[in-house]
Image (tube, rainbow, N blue to C red; front, side, top):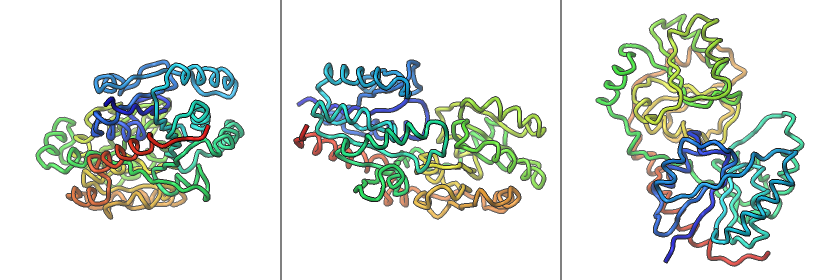
Length: 369
C-alpha cells in the first residue's frame, strides 16, 4: 500500500517556528503510512528543501499571494489540483490566506482539508482589508481547524469553530540539558564566565529587536560582563546592527545568523529573552524550556507557553528597567525538563503518532463537493 500523500501549504521552508515544527513532525512520522509534500509560495529555495527531498518529499512552487495576483493564483491552483489528484489531505499553514487553497481543494474533492492558525494577531496595516476578505472566504472550506494554541484558534476562526490544538512539539531528547556540551559551546563562542542572554527569531517587527537591544543596554549598566546572542536573519537585521553601533554595544552582541545547531546553542545560554509583540505558541520557547532555560517573555504571548514553570511574563508597557531587573535577578541554573515535556505532549515522537493516525483516518472519509 502506498503512503497517503499530505500537501503541506506554507510560504517558504526556512528555519522559522512553523517550519521547524513541521520538520519535527516530518522526521518522526511513519513514512510507510504518510508522506509529506510541500506547496511553497516563493521561487527561491528554503533552508529545509534539501532535507525535505532527502526524506522523499516533493516541493511545488507557486507565486506569492498578493491582492493584485488573486485571479492568476486561483487559475494556478485549479491547474495544480487538476494535475495532482493524489492528495487526500491538504494542510494549510498560511493563516487567513489558507482559505484560497482549501476552497480549491474542496472543489476538487480532497477529503481532508485542514486550516492551521499559527498566530494570535497580525496587527493593522495596509493589507488588513485583503486579510479580512481572505478570512471571509474561509467559511466552510476546511473540514478541520487546527491551531498552535487556544488564542491562535480564536483569533483566526472565532468562537464558533471546534479547534484542535496541535502542540508545537520538539525533539525533547535532542534539547535535554547537557553540562559537558554547555561548556564546549561556551568555549567555542568565547563566552566563558559571562552572563549569556539568548534570543532566536527572524529580524522583523514582530520579534521586537529594538526593544530587546534597549533592555540589554540597561543590563550592561549593571552587569558589564553580559553577552547577547542573537540567532536568525531577516530584513531588519542591518537596522538592528546599526542600532547596536549607535548604543556602542556591538562588541557585546554576537549576531550568529541562521544556524542548524540550535539545541547546542541553547545549552550555552543562561537565560532566554523573547519580547515579541505577538505570537501563537512559539516553537522556540518550547525548545528553550526543553533545554532547561528560564525564559523572560512578553505577556502578549499566551500563558499556554509556560509548560515547565520556567517562563516569566512581563508587560510590554512596563519599563525597560523592569525587564532588565528581571534578567539580572533570575536564576541561570538549567533544569531537567525532559519528563515534564513528554508528559505534556510536547515531544515529537508521541505527537507524530497521533498526527499519523489523524491523517490516515480523515483521508478516508467521504466529502461532499
